[in-house]
Amino acid sequence: MFEISVRSRFSAAHHLPGYPGKCASVHGHNWEVEVRVRGARLNRAGMLMDFCALKDAVAEALSRLDHRDLNAVALIRGIAPTSENIARALFGFLSTRLKSKNCRVTRVSARESPDTQATYFLGAGE
Image (cartoon, rainbow, N blue to C red; front, top):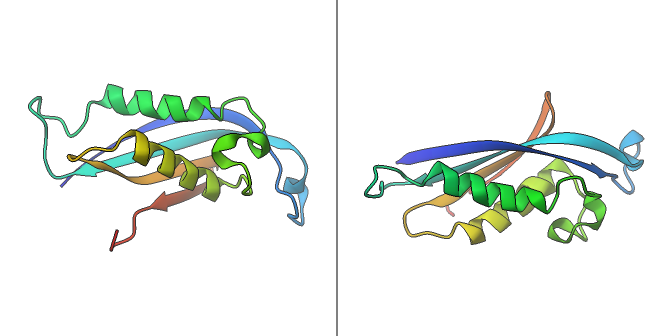
């Protein structure tokens, strides 16, 4: 089994309605996102997937979030824009965008600060 990953960043504002603390007010983060893709076979070039193609897909996804109010972004509208939900929404978007017989998205992490991270990943039976 092979696994590759890329990291990228975006900046955005959000607030967490109903949260009993400072995060209920509008504030911003500089998020770092890591996307992992896994598969068993390499292509003719000896790659699981071209890093450029993975980077392009991640850039497309993050362009929908960068410098936006996450509470109003279609990709996550209707759910609290927590790091957990951002990771899950990106996972869903990228899984559809990178659909392949050779590999699949297995993990997306969203880090809102150097010390905090949320990850959404495939379970053992998925």
